[in-house]
Length: 333
Image 1 (cartoon, rainbow, N blue to C red):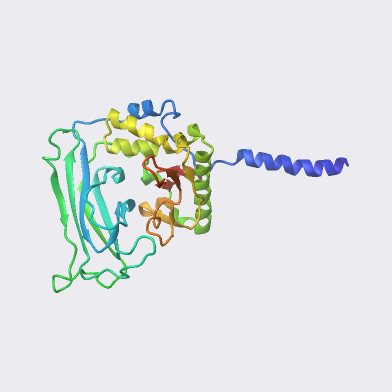
Image 2: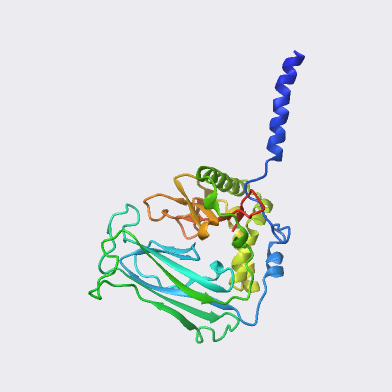
């Protein structure tokens, strides 16, 4: 009986030790220990303001196409809606440092949102024109009056000068370069991140799914003080690159609590996904593969909630992960 007792006990002890020693799939390298109570004060402590605060943004004029916009190979905006788009797309969150930057747009045939019916190819009348501007956020009074047009891109045409160059094709991609000057330093420095394209694809996908489920469980279990340290650097990069005021920081801190303070919010399972690599190999994420354009290309970390105005709405948590050179765990970009 003693032999049997020890044969059973030893594996159990080793199993518990292995479980305790295993690192979580997402860790952080924050400059401060972030909790719910000090979240706002942490933002206020680290967000700096400068004599000049350049904001870079684009306006898009499009017709008969859906599109994605990537900045430096990082997804910045996607549009799978009917009708035109009037609001600008702010680029600063994807500009890590001064110098050469890239804007890539990817065009898809315009289809019906739920069933995917409609054009199968880009049409001769497809149009996608993009204008890049810059203004000084520090000049809050006349910044829009003094905005500077940096790039005006008109889509390419065939020899007849009228027909869209990619008419008859299911996809078209084009990249524009521009120079930017920003006063802040990149918080999540991808130059010291691992090239995930060099990892075994199956192993990378396994780690990514594990990381997504880890973050999902933290939200479901309402572990606020485990959640905020993981996303703080990501949020800090966003509010710093957009030069948020104290009032805007307060709104951001309040919005961060949405997932925990909204009783009706329920996260969906991580399923029907594709692993995607961005950031020139430095970032990885999971995206929906559904043909429903309300989901396609969106983050696989998402949930539903009851809106105050009535009906059910959804929220997508756009989580991009990177792995620093000196670590074997992810951080949230």
